[in-house]
Image (cartoon, rainbow, N blue to C red; front, side, top):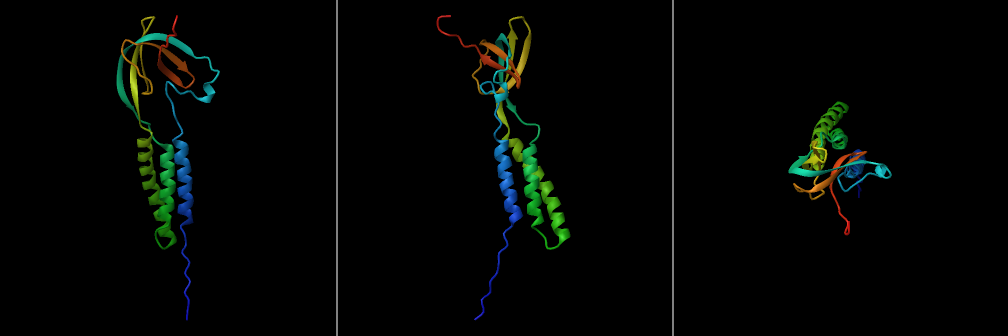
Length: 168
Protein backbone atom coordinates (compact mmCIF):
# COMPACT_ATOMS: atom_id res chain seq x y z
CA UNK A 1 0.00 0.00 0.00
CA UNK A 2 1.37 3.33 -1.04
CA UNK A 3 0.55 6.50 0.80
CA UNK A 4 0.82 9.75 -1.09
CA UNK A 5 1.43 12.79 1.02
CA UNK A 6 0.98 16.12 -0.60
CA UNK A 7 1.73 19.43 0.96
CA UNK A 8 -0.51 22.35 0.25
CA UNK A 9 1.55 25.47 0.00
CA UNK A 10 -0.27 28.33 1.65
CA UNK A 11 0.00 31.65 -0.13
CA UNK A 12 2.05 33.16 2.71
CA UNK A 13 2.72 36.39 0.79
CA UNK A 14 -1.00 36.89 0.35
CA UNK A 15 -1.74 36.24 4.01
CA UNK A 16 1.02 38.60 5.13
CA UNK A 17 -0.23 41.25 2.72
CA UNK A 18 -3.78 40.82 3.96
CA UNK A 19 -2.72 41.36 7.56
CA UNK A 20 -0.70 44.44 6.57
CA UNK A 21 -3.65 45.79 4.59
CA UNK A 22 -6.07 45.33 7.47
CA UNK A 23 -3.64 47.11 9.80
CA UNK A 24 -3.30 50.04 7.39
CA UNK A 25 -7.05 50.20 6.82
CA UNK A 26 -7.81 50.31 10.54
CA UNK A 27 -5.14 52.96 11.06
CA UNK A 28 -6.62 54.99 8.19
CA UNK A 29 -10.10 54.92 9.74
CA UNK A 30 -8.86 56.55 12.96
CA UNK A 31 -9.06 60.09 11.63
CA UNK A 32 -11.87 62.15 13.08
CA UNK A 33 -12.33 65.87 12.93
CA UNK A 34 -15.04 68.36 13.58
CA UNK A 35 -16.41 71.18 15.69
CA UNK A 36 -16.85 68.86 18.67
CA UNK A 37 -13.54 66.99 18.33
CA UNK A 38 -10.08 68.30 19.16
CA UNK A 39 -6.70 66.71 18.65
CA UNK A 40 -4.43 66.11 21.61
CA UNK A 41 -2.01 68.72 20.25
CA UNK A 42 -4.79 71.33 20.57
CA UNK A 43 -5.07 70.87 24.33
CA UNK A 44 -3.68 73.98 25.99
CA UNK A 45 -3.59 75.86 22.66
CA UNK A 46 -5.05 79.38 22.94
CA UNK A 47 -7.40 79.79 19.98
CA UNK A 48 -8.79 83.00 18.57
CA UNK A 49 -12.59 83.23 18.82
CA UNK A 50 -14.79 85.62 16.82
CA UNK A 51 -18.52 86.03 17.53
CA UNK A 52 -21.04 86.27 14.72
CA UNK A 53 -24.42 85.16 13.38
CA UNK A 54 -25.12 82.46 10.80
CA UNK A 55 -26.66 83.83 7.60
CA UNK A 56 -26.74 80.60 5.57
CA UNK A 57 -26.24 76.84 6.02
CA UNK A 58 -26.18 74.27 3.23
CA UNK A 59 -25.26 70.59 3.19
CA UNK A 60 -22.09 69.53 1.36
CA UNK A 61 -20.19 66.30 0.83
CA UNK A 62 -16.61 66.30 2.08
CA UNK A 63 -14.58 64.00 -0.12
CA UNK A 64 -10.86 63.35 0.32
CA UNK A 65 -8.60 64.34 -2.57
CA UNK A 66 -7.15 60.82 -2.69
CA UNK A 67 -6.65 57.87 -0.41
CA UNK A 68 -2.94 57.20 0.03
CA UNK A 69 -3.59 54.37 2.47
CA UNK A 70 -6.20 52.79 0.19
CA UNK A 71 -3.92 53.08 -2.84
CA UNK A 72 -0.92 51.61 -1.02
CA UNK A 73 -2.95 48.80 0.52
CA UNK A 74 -4.57 47.94 -2.82
CA UNK A 75 -1.21 48.00 -4.60
CA UNK A 76 0.40 45.69 -2.02
CA UNK A 77 -2.51 43.26 -2.08
CA UNK A 78 -2.81 43.38 -5.86
CA UNK A 79 0.93 42.87 -6.30
CA UNK A 80 1.00 39.94 -3.93
CA UNK A 81 -2.06 38.36 -5.49
CA UNK A 82 -0.72 38.93 -8.99
CA UNK A 83 2.64 37.35 -8.14
CA UNK A 84 0.86 34.16 -7.10
CA UNK A 85 -0.46 33.77 -10.65
CA UNK A 86 1.52 32.29 -13.49
CA UNK A 87 4.07 29.53 -13.65
CA UNK A 88 7.36 31.23 -14.48
CA UNK A 89 9.30 34.15 -13.11
CA UNK A 90 8.26 36.46 -15.97
CA UNK A 91 4.60 35.57 -15.57
CA UNK A 92 4.81 36.17 -11.81
CA UNK A 93 6.52 39.53 -12.34
CA UNK A 94 3.95 40.60 -14.92
CA UNK A 95 1.15 39.43 -12.63
CA UNK A 96 2.64 41.36 -9.71
CA UNK A 97 2.92 44.57 -11.74
CA UNK A 98 -0.57 44.25 -13.20
CA UNK A 99 -2.01 43.34 -9.81
CA UNK A 100 -0.29 46.29 -8.14
CA UNK A 101 -1.64 48.76 -10.71
CA UNK A 102 -5.20 47.42 -10.59
CA UNK A 103 -5.08 47.01 -6.82
CA UNK A 104 -3.85 50.59 -6.38
CA UNK A 105 -6.68 51.96 -8.51
CA UNK A 106 -9.30 49.90 -6.68
CA UNK A 107 -7.78 50.71 -3.28
CA UNK A 108 -7.86 54.43 -4.01
CA UNK A 109 -11.53 54.25 -5.01
CA UNK A 110 -12.48 52.28 -1.90
CA UNK A 111 -10.39 54.51 0.38
CA UNK A 112 -11.85 57.69 -1.07
CA UNK A 113 -15.42 56.39 -0.69
CA UNK A 114 -14.71 55.32 2.89
CA UNK A 115 -13.31 58.79 3.70
CA UNK A 116 -16.31 60.69 2.32
CA UNK A 117 -18.31 62.50 5.02
CA UNK A 118 -21.37 64.74 5.20
CA UNK A 119 -20.64 68.37 6.00
CA UNK A 120 -22.03 71.88 6.15
CA UNK A 121 -21.04 75.07 4.37
CA UNK A 122 -21.80 77.76 6.96
CA UNK A 123 -21.82 81.48 6.16
CA UNK A 124 -21.20 83.72 9.17
CA UNK A 125 -21.55 87.49 9.45
CA UNK A 126 -19.19 88.68 12.14
CA UNK A 127 -20.03 91.51 14.53
CA UNK A 128 -17.58 93.78 12.63
CA UNK A 129 -19.58 93.32 9.37
CA UNK A 130 -17.20 90.87 7.65
CA UNK A 131 -18.78 87.77 6.10
CA UNK A 132 -16.96 84.44 5.70
CA UNK A 133 -17.98 80.91 4.77
CA UNK A 134 -16.64 77.78 6.50
CA UNK A 135 -16.92 74.12 5.57
CA UNK A 136 -16.98 71.64 8.43
CA UNK A 137 -18.34 68.19 9.29
CA UNK A 138 -22.05 68.01 10.05
CA UNK A 139 -21.48 67.19 13.72
CA UNK A 140 -23.20 70.32 15.09
CA UNK A 141 -26.77 71.56 14.66
CA UNK A 142 -26.45 74.97 13.01
CA UNK A 143 -29.28 77.19 11.70
CA UNK A 144 -29.51 80.61 10.03
CA UNK A 145 -29.95 83.42 12.59
CA UNK A 146 -28.13 81.45 15.29
CA UNK A 147 -25.44 83.26 17.30
CA UNK A 148 -22.12 81.43 16.99
CA UNK A 149 -18.45 81.64 17.81
CA UNK A 150 -15.92 80.82 15.12
CA UNK A 151 -12.97 79.08 16.74
CA UNK A 152 -9.72 79.46 14.83
CA UNK A 153 -7.85 76.38 16.02
CA UNK A 154 -4.50 74.84 15.26
CA UNK A 155 -6.31 72.28 13.03
CA UNK A 156 -8.70 74.67 11.25
CA UNK A 157 -11.63 77.02 11.85
CA UNK A 158 -14.92 75.69 13.24
CA UNK A 159 -18.33 77.29 13.77
CA UNK A 160 -19.84 76.42 17.16
CA UNK A 161 -23.14 77.51 18.71
CA UNK A 162 -22.97 80.06 21.54
CA UNK A 163 -23.90 78.43 24.84
CA UNK A 164 -25.53 80.77 27.33
CA UNK A 165 -25.38 79.85 30.99
CA UNK A 166 -28.49 80.43 33.13
CA UNK A 167 -28.41 83.70 35.06
CA UNK A 168 -26.14 85.58 32.68
